[in-house]
View 1 (cartoon, rainbow, N blue to C red):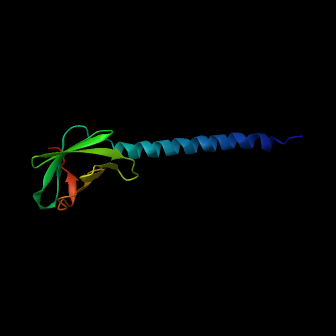
View 2: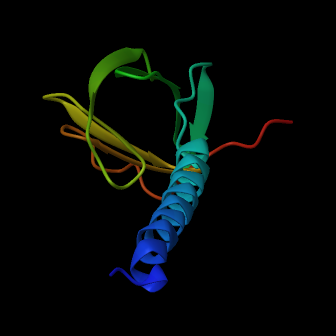
Length: 116
């Protein structure tokens, strides 16, 4: 003879599992909303008055700066959007931008400029 408590446990587990799935999906979509690619040209301003423009798409990013244009490929990352090439690395996390150029390491404290 089976008790009613044995029958109800799977239902409770199913509800708890479903609730956990909803919470994880909600948190994941909120995090993704903050890290969406910026497909329109976006100005980035760094310490010392340096600046450049970025177009960050789903798979590639283009950087426009001082007469140069760089193409970077997106890499999997748990921290924002990460793009790399043999010449540079770019990480976009909200409004913060980390940019490392192999032949110029002076891009520091970079932020996406707020729209006017």
